[in-house]
Every structure is written in C-alpha cells, then in structure tokens.
Amino acid sequence: MTSTTLPRSELSQSLSGWRGGAGPAMLLIHGVGLCADAWAPVLPILTRHFAVTAVDLPGHGGSSNFAEGRGTTLEDFSTEIGNLLSSGGNRSLVVGHSLGALIALDVAIRLPELLTAVVPLNAIYRRSNAATNAVKARVQELSGIENPDPAPTISRWFGESPDGETAAMAEDCRRWLTQVDPLGYRQAYQTFASEDGPTDASLASLACPALFVTGADEPNSTPDMSTNMAHLVPRGRAVIIRNARHMMLMTHAAEVCAHLLEFCKHLDGAHDQV
Image 1 (cartoon, rainbow, N blue to C red):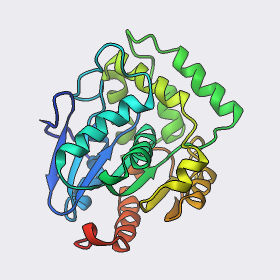
Image 2 (cartoon, helix red, strand yellow):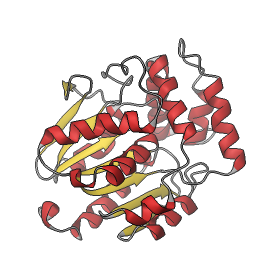
Image 3 (cartoon, rainbow, N blue to C red):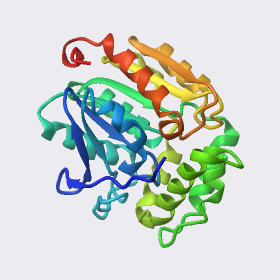
C-alpha cells in the first residue's frame, strides 16, 4: 500500500476532512491521534456505494483545536459531529473507529434522527481494571506540549514486528501520531480514557441498526466487548475478523468493507442503493 494524503476541504467552521463518492451519505470518524487519511484503504470500495465524508476530529489532521473550555468530554466531540451531520441535510450511516466508535455511538444515542445506522469498529465496553489503569497511565504521559514516542502504541496496534504492507501502514500511523497537535492528542486521549462505553440502558434504547466489528487478536477493544454490546442493541450484530488487530480498517480493509456492505443490504430506505 502506498501512503495516501487525502485532499482536504472545509466541512464546517472548525472541521476539515475529505469528501468523495456518490450514493447514500456515510460519515467516517477516526480514532485518537489519527486523521481522515487512516480511512484511505477502504475508500476505493466505499466510494462506489456511498457519498463518503471522512472527518478530521478537532486537533487532528486539518481541524482546529477546540475553543478554550471545551475538548474534555465525549459530548464535546459528539456535539461537533452532530452539528456536522445536521448541516448535511440527510441522515447518514456513521462509521467510527476506536474513539470514533464511542463518538458514533454517543451521537446515535443522543441524536438518533441524524443516523440511518451506526457501525462501531474496535469499540471499548467495560474495560478490565488492568486495561483501565493502563490507559489512564498513558494519559498522564501526555504533556499537551510535545508528543511521546509512538513506538509502544504502534506495537499495541500492529504487533511487535509488522512486515510488508503492514509495516508501511504502521509507518503511516507513526507519522500521524508524531505530527498530531499535542494538545488535541491529549484532549482526545483523555476523553477516550475516561469513557467505558455506553450504558447498558443506552444500548438497549438504541433505535437504529448497529454493526459492531473488531479483530479477533485485538487486546484492548476485545471480541467480547463488541459481542456484548451487540446483544444489548435491539437491532445489533457483531462481526469478529480473524487475524485482525486494532488497525483492521487498514490491514483488513476488504473484509471490513465486505461486512459493512452486507450489513447495508438489510437496511431499509436510505441505503437501498447499495
């Protein structure tokens, strides 16, 4: 895979991102420290079926940081995404990865009129005590002034010795983690670390269809997390991708897209063009 930098446009007063394709609306939300470019491997497939928007979260990619006094809660991020969806005029299928999955779920729960369906990739739900302590410890290492060595993060996401195309993907992630705005990175990570997934009651009340996808070898957003959330959602399903870890949207792009498109075949109305 050749590294791709997507051309950006202004999506709102505060958010930048990439747009392309035609069809029903789809919004892609990346995870902590990444940017819209992380979705590049799935775009050749998804843009054949959807009008895709890949957003840069605040403080990431080309998007500006939050205004002073904001950026410390999941609701801050969800409000930005909700405003973006509202401005589009059409309901969207929202796909989120990691922190983006938490944002997508929060928007689906609080603003259901804006979505046709939600697809959380590598979402967390009820971390173990060890995982909670580890993610909170990592937040304390973030100064908001300079970014830390990304090597430990790359190892968690790709394993110890990625090779071939996977090594190139890992290098892209290393570059994004190095170049992200340090304050934006800290705010996003702090939000991610402070969350433990939606409440059971919120999941049970989720009105739209939901497809939870994660990797079988994912140590942090585990298969059990996705399966347990899917069981609580009235129209929920879970898919576990074999031999995949945290960055499956890059390493297993074709499989992720295949499951997403199959899911969309069973949606009504807004996605019958798929």
